[in-house]
Length: 74
Image (cartoon, rainbow, N blue to C red; front, side, top):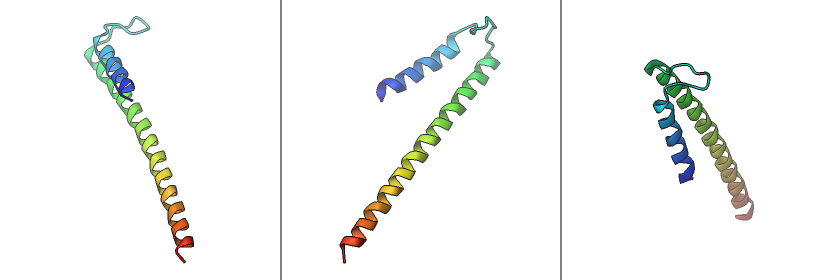
């Protein structure tokens, strides 16, 4: 997991260092900020989906364990 975090950091540094993008358009500070904001929103969206799935799985495991406990405690 450490490697993936470092890759994101290197990508963000690349976004701010580059002077032109893939279409040879000059990257001003305003465009760099917009690009960073879009990247941040996308990353936070992925993070929300990831934690949502994690929470649902934990909740289902809790319900299953509770049901097993209640059926075997009688």
